[in-house]
Picture (cartoon, rainbow, N blue to C red):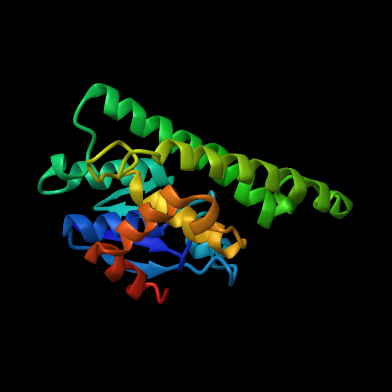
Length: 209
């Protein structure tokens, strides 16, 4: 089955990219650069009318949204147990992580900080939106730090499908100037562990990061 990942370098699409490398699934990469406005190109909107990356094409099926794509990749691995939650409670915890990371930290925090125009048509309000988003981010970073205290990975001692998204957001926090090593040592240690995984290194090299 032909698998294609539409991605933008360093975007949240890096998370499923890492998972594809982890699983060894054969896939093709197609760059849709967000910074260059390529997500608004008509050809891409025909694929994903939402105008967002990532998109995963698997055969004739199109998947959007990071949590859904990461879950599908994990289930599609030769050994799904290698990445997927092992119990019903772990599955619920993974969904809990994904819902909050994608629906709140990304959509409210990072989007408000970097793209206030998504929240208002009034440029005069951008400063207030960015300030509120910054508050959400600080609270979110502290929550991640607390959740990772005493554990190696998002769900405990087993690496899994949530961890690449935590790694992506660590990189975004660094871009915003967060003192990750000083203020969020557990999250920073998680990122260091990620960087020791060959699949992570390969994905980052392929994206020019």
